[in-house]
Length: 176
Image (cartoon, rainbow, N blue to C red):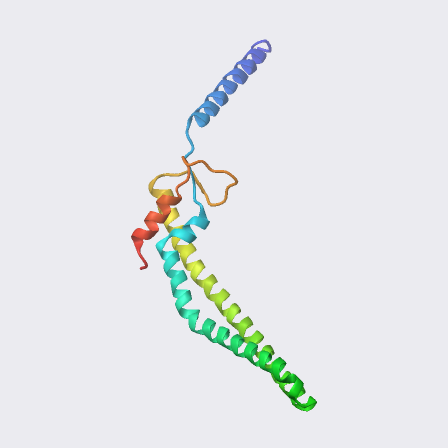
């Protein structure tokens, strides 16, 4: 019996290796279905993203104009002070300079608030678009039986780029 044990061990090893090789070949023979989505293009070209941008422009255009007008008035007041400075008393010149500094400080505060509000709204709108895009990508993933869909890649060939498909599907949904 001792002589059959090495043979049976050898036979088990050979059979095991053959099964392992067959399984490996089977896995390698299967094609992986991989897709790539250019997120930047989706956020630039999808109708939903363009609508979000237009909404933000409409929402913030009045405040932008008010800020621009205030900056123009401040510049005009500073120019007037520079022109009038030689004829003003020192007390009047100092008073007007303090007013300009206060107005400038107020303008800078309003610009910061405007920028913070705009950034917050952009992030909200962007998150909504990204959420909808991710749902579309998941639908494509499931319906077309992808193994992997990437959104970031150093290089991606046109064969795996499904960005146009995602944009078309998003546009088909409309701005529901």
